[in-house]
Length: 85
Image (cartoon, rainbow, N blue to C red; front, side, top):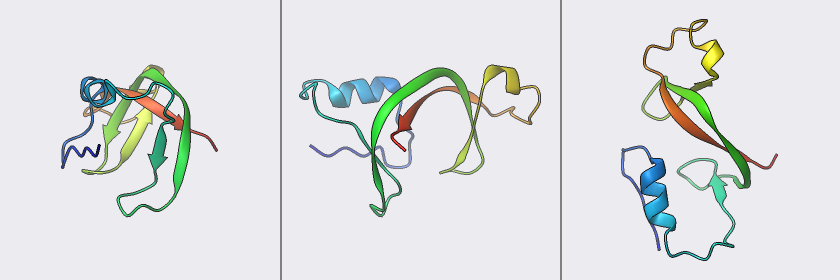
């Protein structure tokens, strides 16, 4: 099965739909870019942060206590998946 959101970002709800019915023991792999350069296993994640887009494909993540310190008026709540380093 292959899935792509196009130019839309992937949400928790959409990810849940995609993963439904898959083997729960499948590893999650993070791809470094759209050209298939660099792959890493995911090892965890964290909610409660905010994503502030700097472009249509890149941005910064901030903790709640950092929002006032930076210009983050476009920041939205997010879930961050961590790769194995």
